[in-house]
Length: 492
Image (tube, rainbow, N blue to C red; front, top):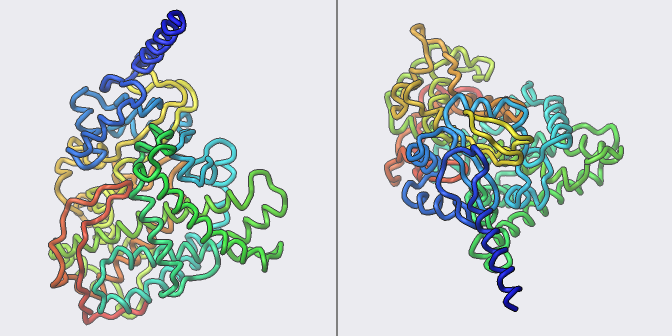
């Protein structure tokens, strides 16, 4: 018994020593703690600073580094800040992997499949397939513009009498456009599936953070306290999404033919029937999930912030409406192809994406082999988080990043300036595949709404705040807007 107890104690000591030992030349950061790593350190700082990027900024200052070395449970994790290291991670092949952890598997119905959570050959195959066929189905073409205009026309009828927050209205429009491209049909305004989909996507976003939180660091807690850590809720939401998407997929199977290429589900089913490796109903469900998560929340949230800023800063609204009245015929719809004619609209949207940091932390990535950042050694399979706030609010580059100033994106002649330090859709091979749709939606919705309405604060609304609500996607604090029709009435 004495020998067994001694062996047990020695084994335990060795285990704890290995748990707190940092890899050689690992980036600076707080001391490692056994089992939990830095999970509770980050949670404690999160209560103080509210936002994950502010926690990372604080630790960067404490340890005087732009490459922060952490550990989440047993998972080595680094956070890169600054333009130099952010660009390195986004563009180099070694960082194209995704972590093989509980968090990403749970996000993708229990497996590393689809586009967002997968990597390697399977990811390449599905990403190329989706980008190619969305383009064939109208992404970036007139078909997409027609879908956008149809949703915009419906929205314009609702806005004058609307007393509800904009968030769900805008999300409804964007989701309907994506739903049409992927399924070939649209939701009716009162379709309960639409409200359900918006609710599920919003709840999932609030339930996750990019480091995976407690569920990722200590996944065994799901067997002890599944409700407390949110595991039961995520599984419930996953089941509801699976049911919603599978219902639509089964409808497509009923009427499918090999020459049917009217929407993404149809062309995907054709690949399944061909026996193409890795194509399956399970993969299709997660691909659809990836498209809706990536496309709906960020686009609608950016629009929400942009309209909110016109309420807070009526001078911006005055200047923008003056420019649009001068350059656009009131009887002709505005299109994304005309964006150069309204540079101030583009400048406001770019400044919204810079200033409000819709997604301040992006990733996570996984190192595919041992590599080096800023002379620090990064082991293979290390998780990498990217602090976009450090770039979009870099004081050395932007001079006054804390000021909302669209003019920073315009030259002396009022023409648009593109800044290397602003890349809201990321860079490299994992750049957002829906960027064309997002930019088109943002410009068309924003300019037509501003051209047709004077936007003011609703009498029953709290004063809008420049401080967003925290989350994976940062969104505006609740507010209500009043839309008063202007004399200019465009054909939408």
